[in-house]
Length: 87
Length: 295
Image 1: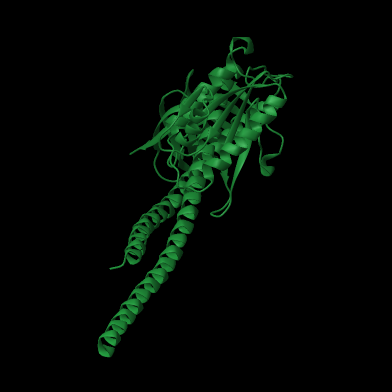
Image 2: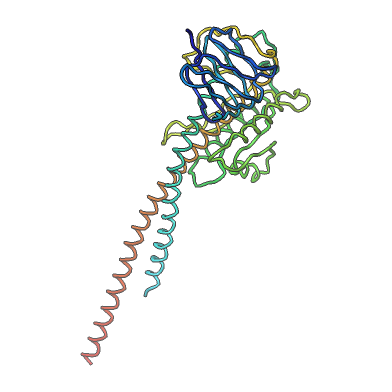
């Protein structure tokens, strides 16, 4: 199965990167889920939770504030003003 | 003790205490330049991601947006100059100010009105001393810049850019800062921030996919482009900070070396003076004894 190559970066540091099965983020229009094979998209993020389902291990939750994310050929880049991984 | 010796002793003492300060400043700069460089590197993923996205959007040039429009005959330009807050960094601030002056001269030649925006107390002092006007100034921690300042500057400049030209808005935004090339070379450079000239690295020159925009292309651009400007300003600030510290380290190193040379020189002179005094005292004693013996 194809996987997503996810990269989460905040303004001053890289937050998380790795392979994932799916990703859910909150856009200004509501939650948006990304699975492998998604059409290229550029979306503006609202403040809220970002959930990543990695290929290995449990779900990673991060609180992000402002920014956007882009999906392009299974490469997902989340660019946030502020992002903190919640435990 | 002779007056001459006292003068040299004082000079040696004051030079050695200055040497201690130089040494301490050099050590501080050395310690912090590494941190500044790692900060600059930590912000690279963000800058790269945002550049990639902007490049992708800019490739879809069917979107009409105020930030991507070009002006044929620019009338007014904002120039942001990044210098340092403190001195003792050799020619660091002077060089970047010189670079900005030549940009100003060029813009003036092209009959473009210049609105200076300043960052750092040294460049502010330069403008104040010459009673020159500037739009706005930001000072404080130029050697460890924070994102908030970059955001504030970015917002101010983008607001200015969006304003129509006849209401005092600007058509172009330039950024003057010092590029960190290595510990020994730092080059002052001029970069145009707006209108967008998207810089793209060689490796992602491929065809950009046709993106869908969520919620709409305009809103995505509205959110994206100010962030792009902020990230460009922030990475320039981080590079300038690394350059400032590297310049300070170099300046303090040569100041310390000079202090050493001076101390050596004054020690020799002091020894000479002391020897001369002893010789004189001896010859006076001998002459006195001779005079007594012969009488």
